[in-house]
Image (cartoon, rainbow, N blue to C red; front, top):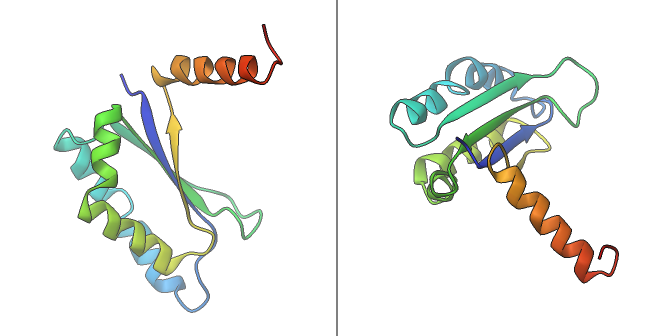
Length: 122
């Protein structure tokens, strides 16, 4: 089961690049990630286009896998290019690591350790 993830989130398309953004979303958003699943390089992903509400959030992809799969993904040239493509067509792009699934217990343990170190928990 997945323990690590990468959350790729973006805002609205960059002005003047709306057509390229639509093409990317239709053609590449999930195609590349489906290829990674087929190759066993990630376990799964979820993609979402958000309903209009602000310019800060337009959509996201949560990519999930083992710690090793996610670490390898960050070193992969194809993924780095994919991330640059997202940055080229959308504003407010963030790529954030996450604990998911089996990794949640590890994250809870780290948080408890931090609370103890800060003297907020015994």
